[in-house]
Image (tube, rainbow, N blue to C red):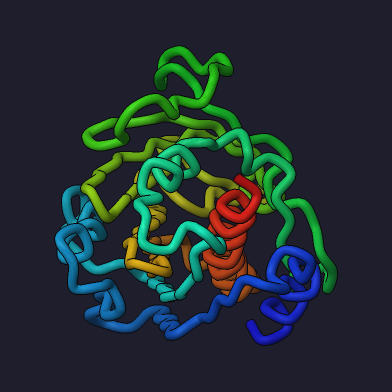
Length: 244
């Protein structure tokens, strides 16, 4: 993780020269009983935006990783609401295409998502424009991601939005495969992003919850792959916010 953060910091240096950010906390639990989130902000949405896992599972996840960040607002936007900007970013899945991450396997930066785009529905998977109009509150959006680890799969994201917060919780609709193995069953990978606005900064909370097959030799790879997604989602938000 330290190497990952160093590489990302270098690659984003030109964006961050005048804009402060920091990771304030991180937890990783694997095959530990009672693996429940502990870093979620004590806010209106933070209290329950992560519990979608328990709507479809009666047990705690095998894998849980969470991270909490602080991102400074762009100069000149302090004290003004940026929630509409954040809401649009959180639904702009097409901007994830080409997103890079640090590959622990290859020991270098690599493209994580070869493809990423919004689709109309699970039954109509044709590419459509990102649904960024209006408030995100109450919306469900489906999207396709093709990544280096798990191939091409359909995901669904549920949104909640208030005057100061945006939360989306995404789950895989299709099974996820690694090489010849069916590594993750449908609805067994949840990724949650919660962004809370303050006067001069944002609190960014990211959570991954997953069950995956215990396959000798690849357990560690899957664990690192899920951790990379936390970094990737944070980088995606940060880059889009500073560029818009």
